[in-house]
Length: 271
Image 1 (cartoon, rainbow, N blue to C red):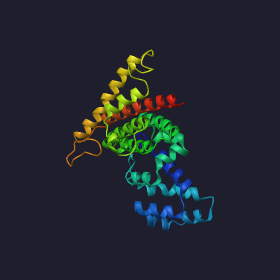
Image 2 (cartoon, rainbow, N blue to C red):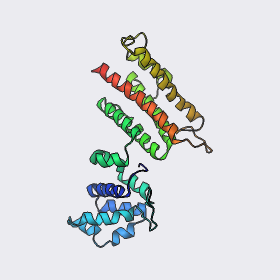
Image 3 (cartoon, rainbow, N blue to C red):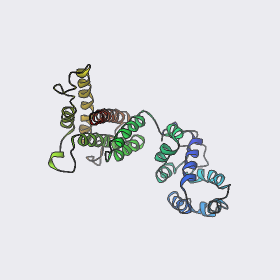
Image 4 (spheres, rainbow, N blue to C red):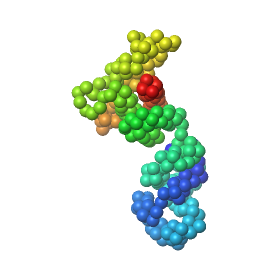
C-alpha cells in the first residue's frame, strides 16, 4: 500500500471489501488471525445483523474495522496510522486485487503508481494471448515493490523469461529451455523479424530501436548479477545486503517495458 494512503481511505477500503465478501466464518477467521475474535463474538450487533440481513450491518462493520486493524490509542498522524494489523488484513482480504477489480478509483489512491501501471498494461496483453504464469509474477512484483524489493527483482527476471520463452514456444523444463536472457532476447528479435536482417529490420527508427533493446537488455541482464551477488529471490544467503527500492524500480521498469513491447509485437505478428 502506498505510504501516502489516507487513514480514512484505508478504513473505507477494508469496509468495502468486508461488506462485499464476508460471512460469519470469514469474520471468525479474521478475528483469529488478528487476535480480535473476542471483540467480534462479543459485539452486540455485528454478527447478528449480518445473520439477519439487517440494514444497520454496515454501520457495525465501520465501527469494527479500526479495531480489527489494531488501531492503537496513541495518535499517529502518518501511515500506517497505528494500524498494527494492516498487513494481516490486507493479505486476508486480498485487498489490492479486490479494489483493482471492484473499486478502481480507490485502488488508484491506495496502490497504483507508475510501476503498477506498467504491470497492468503487461497483464492485459498477456491475458489476451492466454499466457500462463504472467499473473503470478506480476503479483509478486506488486507485493515486492511494496514490501520486499528483492522479491520484485527476482520476479521481474522470471516474468521476462516467461514472456520470451512463450513467444519462442519453449515450455517445460527440458535442456532447450535453459537459456539466459541475452540469448532469449536475441532469438525473439529474430523470431519477430526485429534483428538487422529481419523483415522489420529496415523500418524507420529500427536501428535506434535495436540500440534501445540493447540498453534495456543490459539492465535486465544485470538482474542476474544482482541475484548472484546476494540480491533477489532464489540465490540469497543469510547475510544478504539489503537492496534499495530505487534499484528494484529500475530493474522492474526495464523488464516489464521490454516484456510488454515483445508481447505487443508478437500479438501483431499473430493477428
